[in-house]
Length: 106
Image (cartoon, rainbow, N blue to C red; front, side):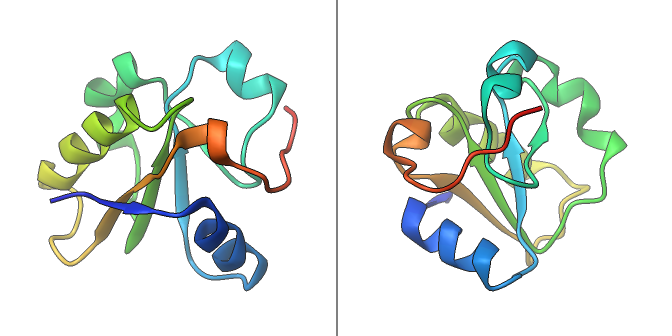
């Protein structure tokens, strides 16, 4: 089961330099307007075809505008055999709507 992670927790982990893989599933124009620093853009419709292109980390946070489609994407990643079964796949609670941290522009 995919757990939610609070935006504040993600921000703290990033500030502490924790090994956190952030996957932003929005479309490239939205991603370019601002995203979590270090996030990787894989639009949700492309995720099934591109999942093999990546080395998946031990802690993966999936992000979307409000936290609903990222929940679905996180479930898909969690079930993917290329993601270690010990990996934590998390959904950013509230998505970008609730993110108060720094945003990077492309």
